[in-house]
Image (cartoon, rainbow, N blue to C red; front, top):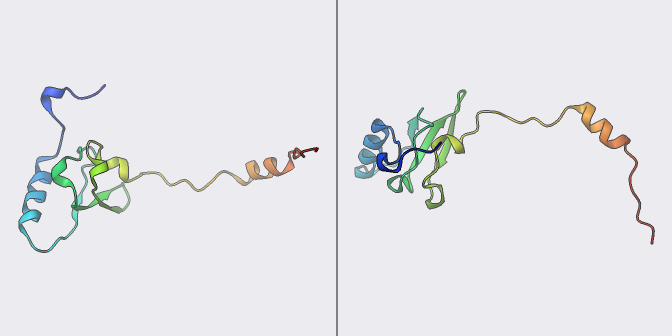
Length: 101
């Protein structure tokens, strides 16, 4: 279920403060955040974040296309290493179809 429109998007208050502080500074240092549930708002466009995925911080620079999504969507928490070798062997054993012309 989506959030009520009258409430507006959820953004961590401390994150908004950090973004405002960074806009006033000349050095653009990435903002470290653990708030994966915060929604990306238009004020975040062009700002660099380091989003925690449970193990390490994933670098992210916000673009216009990301507005409305959550920060956590761009920092995956699971690593896909591929399917098991048994699945690959089964695929090789299948007879290949040949085109007869």
